[in-house]
Length: 86
Image 1 (cartoon, helix red, strand yellow):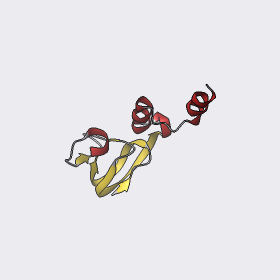
Image 2 (cartoon, rainbow, N blue to C red):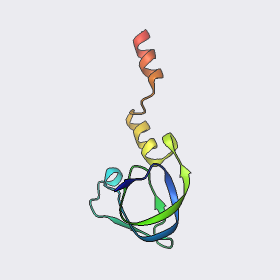
Image 3 (tube, rainbow, N blue to C red):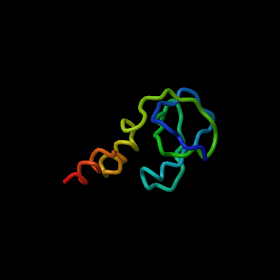
């Protein structure tokens, strides 16, 4: 289960199955292919197969980064510093 570090689009794949449960809650592995479902999301795990992707987003711009930002879990210390100052 390699962790995908960024969002991307699959450009080459060989029987690729991804565990997206961290983002979707769905426990079934999702088959990815060039013609049906080529989007790969950061924070998901490769369970079978192999592939190559073109990175489209990283960090706070990725889907998992957007979710963490919405949940207030960005790790941004500026808000913490502001809160401590009063």
